[in-house]
Image (cartoon, rainbow, N blue to C red; front, top):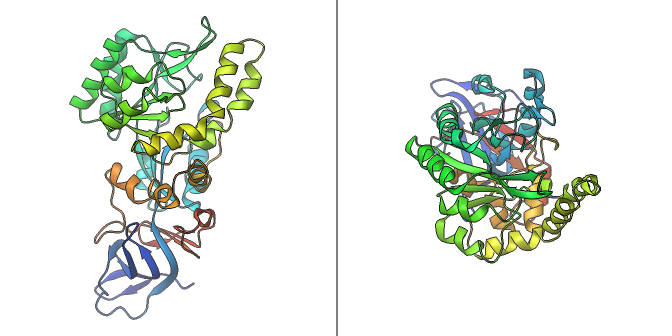
Length: 370
């Protein structure tokens, strides 16, 4: 492949040909990238260009990812860079970083890395989450910390809604209803949306009725709470590639916390039914991998495949990491004048989402990066 050429009067030009999936049902034959932006008009004087051919999607979205974090806490910049590059090379060009203690704003200055929407640092109850991850506080301080992270983040705040209570020996809700209501109201006043980690059933009604915008994992959804989510327009990010680890986690807790272990196994066993029931009820579902904790980066294709396995139609599972996901996060897709973040494949990913695992080319800000 030749280098991107400079065409007099137009700046950098890339010609993308084939089948450009502007939307699930809108397909164009080509687009041009001029100065890093999408155009559907051939630029005047464009003779020497780089041409890329194939099936084209907007850069994929991982709506639950942790750049700058590993199983032990924050990582150094070199490690965070490798994480971001791994996601980029897998086609993930927009990340909602669902909680991290690391300052990754330096990534914003890198034109070769994915764009990140940050939720600030997790907010958890004292000794009720993974060590070195979260602000660990008590309910009286919840509003203050939510306000702090709303100001620091990029329009999102992340709560830990439930976690194992060692005294109870099982998952329990972390926050009283009144404090949750006040905290979510404060986030909304500051223009931020709120999401929460929730594995179990108990915290969901309070969080949704308090006005939360999204639930991560959502394995505790039941026939009682699914209609409530649908009615209130609360989205979920199931992270099924993470839920696949529940049996291993449960095995590690059998001796000390048998109730918790049994509960985790039940949540795992019904995971696909839970997601399909949520989809059937009209709940918005988006792709997220939970990479950066105990999971590696670059798993976006695997998560889309898991949604299909759960019974979500391929076109909708694809939209959950492409068109619908970008609209939900307020970022453009392959629209006129949008940043040229796109991925090129050898075949139609709508027909087989497995195609996502092998991108032919990854283009970030108009330049072929992988």
